[in-house]
Length: 115
Image (tube, rainbow, N blue to C red; front, side, top):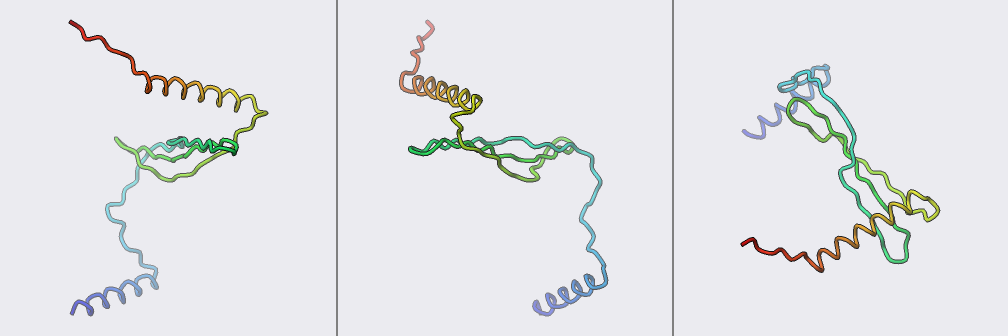
């Protein structure tokens, strides 16, 4: 009996598609919103013996009402160019940040209790 019901539904669906009858969109509504693309993840590969590479993951978001939804994702990347001043500056600043963070991790500040 279940097979017969499924068969009838498939036949009706095929019949509807052939005649150009579309299924009703459940709770369809027209909305107004804002769309933008942003970088949501940055990955830096600094493998030994290879030029460093940075990849920026991107997402396109759509804000509707009180929330937003992710619409798509993409990425853009490049290898470090030792001749490019902007790349040298970024590499130097990231190395400085790494040095500060590892020093804090290895030598956490001592907090004196308040008495």
